[in-house]
Image (cartoon, rainbow, N blue to C red):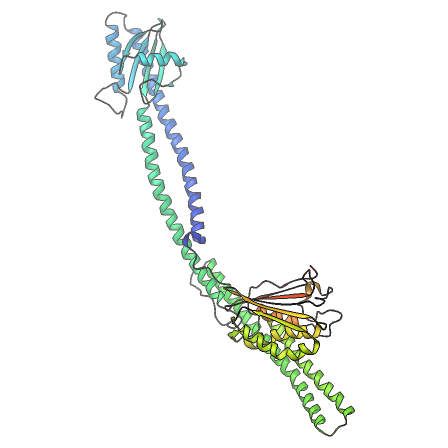
Length: 489
């Protein structure tokens, strides 16, 4: 396992966390502003409606009390102009006092009777007639030639005429527009600042997690003494580092105990076996008849096979526990294959087997040379011991940038169907096999200890196919998938 420290910032977890957190904050603040904006707009309109309702009532009362003589228009106009000056905080354009307020009185026949405001009032009266609004409720009025709508309130007089008082919504819209602009600037500033804070804090925390990951990836079966870095912060990440170190302490202790047990067991078993073999050789060196020496030679051979079985079983057990001690060196797999084939040529020729080797040339791997030698020996032993005469063994060696692929295929009877998915388990073998069921188990254990994988299958055209994927670089931690065996595809 290798940590991906070369990823761009935008592909890092800190970036994603910061982005989602900022997005949630931005959406939340935008919703809050929408509510505030609506409240402010409604409050401004409520105040405008209250002012309009009060002023139109006053104007209606003045118009009702003023005699209908030639001074009527002048009095009502002056009162309307005074009302227009009472509108607070209104922008003026072109020096005109009445550009945001208009006063209009229409007779009972619908004709314009009195007008105070910008223009001649015909456009306003036409808009009022087209709208046909309810007289006692303020409403919006769009007048042709004016950019902003008017908020209009009206009152009906006793003589059948109507008085209309309109207030431009220009200033209300200006306030809301300024509010939106300032909020947007402040919102962008806060969002960017918040993103930077979240990204910095998350990046700093995840950098420590990355340091832990990199340290853990360097801790392999050959070096269990290293530990992940810790800090003085009493937080979740600090607890994670301490927990990993405690776990590594237990693993190191367990591996030490396993090595001690296996070494003691191997010593305790090898010593009597070696002693027995030595005594048998002494007896064999004396003058014995042929019929007397044959049982002794057979017993020595059985002791050798028992010793080999013991060594292989212990190696498989250690490899399965990820405790196999490896001494990695650069090994030319192409050269090793050719040397091993030269050694096995007499056995192959005696059984009438043909070997076809196709290699991509020198292929260097970083592996334990002794274990790799035994892996090749186990594969060739299986072919010699289980193939009938006149079969062909095809060996292919290829390489990619990161992986070496070794395939061993034959045209024999294939793997036994009763073995199934347990082919790489210890002491699992076919009914007709004379072995101890440790060859493939040892191969899979060693390859897995180096970070590779093994697959075995019976191809549709017959025979047996075994494929080994061996990493070219050293893998400090073993995370290779379990080997998959497919029988009789």
